[in-house]
Length: 369
Image 1 (cartoon, rainbow, N blue to C red):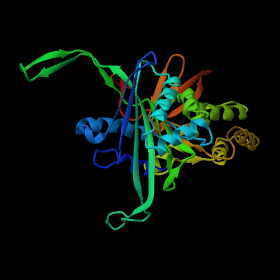
Image 2: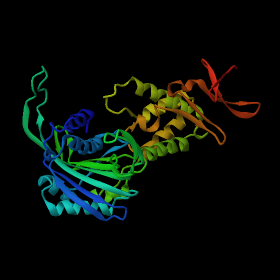
Image 3: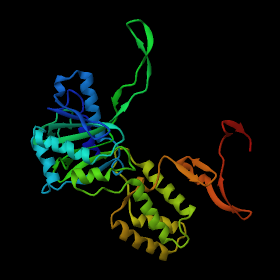
Image 4: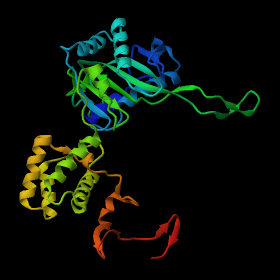
């Protein structure tokens, strides 16, 4: 799904902008037992309550592709895919299928404590391409996108709060109570793609980029979990380090960081994710005086590990930080000024040199150098 598609769907999660006919809920305790379940129409709820439910669905469309969001294959000739298809076609009005989905989620979800499973169905007419370009209302096509969305939210105990009571005009402690937190995972089926429904994929969301909940993906979709961001990054640098005679050096990692960070900074926020090819990485290696024979070895190893496709730049570099960590020190530098850092030997000992610009403070105290 493109960012434009996601933005279009997120705008629907307001009480007056959607066609959600039902919201199903299933509250599960820490033992995996169903405590209660319900089905309600958003139209029957107070506005503030409806907005709370809608926000919990909207967050499933948040995050970043490849980090929190993934396209997961759905096989409609498989019982798990057929279950999702039945729920979508029935607009969640098939009670048995709804219960089967709840059970599949419970059996394959590992969350600490209790949680709430929410499910909803929505439809909207897809605007025709190039409609409304002069400020007119968009022309609605005959193509209707019908989808279901699942949001799985931890239920946590709140902290005691000192709260003002109007009755006696005084403050009193409010005892801890159970409250629904932001979703830990969820999905939309089918995925919205090329202006319509892609019945062979679901858009999957996980809040924790390091834990993609592989058991959930297998149990609900019958699919293999994609690699996490950290796994892809580690694989990339393993391939790179194994290809270099000297192993990974500071100069190589610094050069990759500086180049990709600059490219990412130049891109607009709504642009597609920046993909970097193995040839581009090879050029960066050459700029670090890595021998062509070694660059060719990296190219071959990359092809074997990742294939001919590029890798997302944001996966292998961090725009928000440039950190160096040793056994006794941790140095954090402005990610756009990693050029201020140099590694060399001083009196036969390895040293990290950070060139100084502006004032210097130590533990908050300004010092002179």
